[in-house]
Amino acid sequence: MKFMIIFWTLYMLVFCIPFPIFIYMMTSEITTEPRNTPALSYVYLGFSLLVWLYVLLFFIKNLFINTFKEKNTITYIAQNGIPREAEIISYKLIKYDARKNINIIHIVLSFKNLSNIQIRHEMMFYDTKPQEKRFDVGKTVKVLLNPDTSKEPYFILSGVQTRFKIKNMILRIVFVVFMIVYVMGLYSYFYIRESFDFGWRFLTFMHPIIFSGVMFLLTILVYKQIVGKFVKNKKEERILFAGRNAQAQIISVSQTGLTVNDQPQLLFQVSFKDFKGIEHITVYKKIVRLLDLASVPQHGTIEILYDQNNPKKITIPVV
Image (cartoon, rainbow, N blue to C red):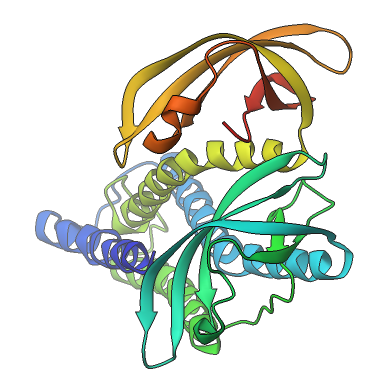
């Protein structure tokens, strides 16, 4: 995660700021004549303002608003969460920080969801007391489920404490302030340098005022495409915690040919009736451990969870 943050930050600071300005300075000459009509210049100006407004709001929303919302949700769960006993069925040490005596660990928990259906869920977090060995395989921990499944996270470990890292918040504030100052400076500098009493008629699509914003916009869109791959998992996770349960008839089970970390992906085709008595046939793809492959049922019934608003969307909590 830290690598991705550093990568995208460096990418934006190189290709979205100096690169458009450098290309413009190298390829364009200052002219005292207007480059377009008044109407077109205002079209360009309006377009640039919309792009920069979207870019700035995106950063403010993702760096501050979403962070405060998540903290408030965690506080809500800590006060109103539905308790469950969770068994630790898998433990993996990712990294040990000797200076802080903290483990970064990955565990798999087994517990009952809001519908009292046994599910498994993976999570990675900081273990601040590794000497207590609280998360060894076979031990149980208390989790709190979020009663409001329209908001994330859907559960937390009981006793979890949240606080903002001052250093991280300062860096976020500095970045947003830098972006605002950069945008204001971009408009001011080039207007003074190139307007020549013709207003904004010096603007073109490749002008840094526009092109720099477009580069930021494209970077954000690429970022959303990457993050979008995880949105599907989030939707499935919501079904895992809030979906209705049903007994589904297995129609077929086959391997898709795709493997993730050498674990095969299976395609389940099932039929089931929702709580209204309407029958549905749908498919579901699931990564299964090699050790569990032989125990995967090929016929009969299997427990599923489905989205009551869209019953075609299902998940199989345990295979």
